Length: 158
Image (tube, one colour):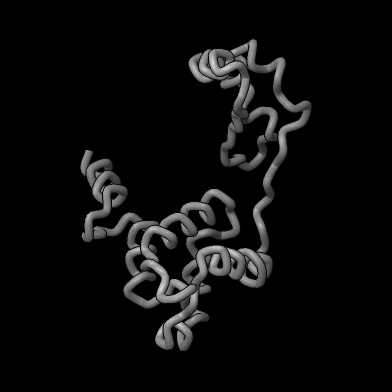
């Protein structure tokens, strides 16, 4: 934390530092980062008075809003095979994310990585795109040149 604060000062405070952590049951947002902030007392002068808690979203919000917006932002169109099994794709996405924003961000990042370049204005989501996304999310042995999966596999071996 001290190094981050030193870098921030060296850059004339021209960027923001956002600390995020998953809130454990029974803890408050303030408690969660207390120890980290205590290690850099100068940083506490610049904190917001009350941390912001991003609450987990409901399944309905995820399916009706967030998942739709992720697909719109990524210019996705569904192949006929995915269209026929859209409920399965939605269920798998919800099962992984469970409404947690950090999981949603990782899901969207991996989806963006796997989607091909646009055919016209849209990127076509096929089962061949979907499977590597979920393999990466769940840490399965994903082959085609994936640095993240190989690092995860290496970590599990240790």
